[in-house]
View (cartoon, chains in turn blue, orange):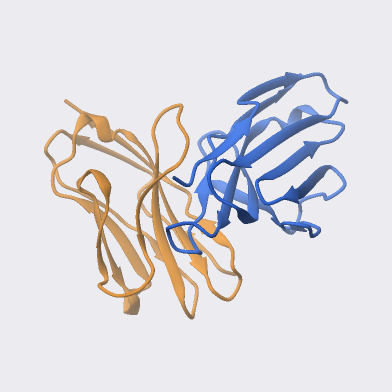
Length: 118
Length: 113
């Protein structure tokens, strides 16, 4: 149980276009989803926290108008990178937390989406 | 600022050697502690976690970690590593105050046969 999927697993786009990444909790209801960013050979950095039905809370330095997050249901959150530029190229990872057989404080991670902006 | 430190950035071991990876954090108050592993090309997997109770926590694949509150540490150990343990290891701390999971910088482990 507690499986989180992401789609797509990788995407290549041209500079200036927008890219949408989906994060789904497959077998539990995720009251909270998190979006992280991981640069090559670096750690995960929290970008934003989203609660179902509420606006996302962004970390300092993360542009909310560039990284649009929607958490419209208890099983789906989306991250849209608007007007992507090469510096947005990174590995984006989501996690989900909710009522599962485990502890409420445990986050379950998706497999990540590698974004390359040309 | 709240932070998580992993002192070993790159560790190289031979098979059957013992492993200890350090993790220290700077939070006060109640915390939950995690170790994650990321195998090459794969996503994060939970190795073990500490929420409360016995400070010595056993996880999957023979890993264990000890929470020492007075030292703000949560070091990961394995008595005998295998080649298949080659991966990136991340310590993470969840502070009840902030409700944010903060990751350490990671330790790259290479195990040679």
